[in-house]
Length: 175
Image (cartoon, rainbow, N blue to C red; front, side, top):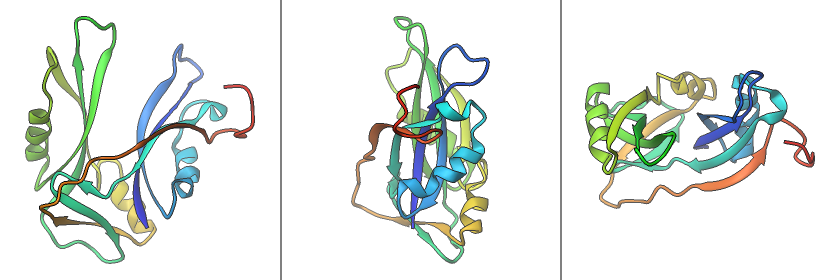
């Protein structure tokens, strides 16, 4: 089984523009996560789609694996969403990072040190992947646990940006 990070988008009944969120799933392939994402989606069903996705197998000097027994280490995997402003852009900028730390405060410090080049950075959401977004519960429901192993071999965060409609028939012409 694999741990997936999935950037979803779509419309709500009251939104003027598309809204986005980050979701996490467990499966052999990305499509195994679709039903859970559909159940979690708060917007209009037909608009739901994936914009980007990745298999999360490495973060912050640690290999990540899903196993069928609990992890005994002190380290935890955190997803941190950082926000900031650029005076030349009429929008809020975001950067998403994955860090490994023993607690939330250490994870925040690590994540904030990773951001450079923003005039006014700030933190929006900070989620401990295993608990804050109930990934631990989801993984347990599927009888899997996140295991972290220190490694000296850095691996790039590779992801796929591809529009994948999942809230409607993929062959529909309307968005």
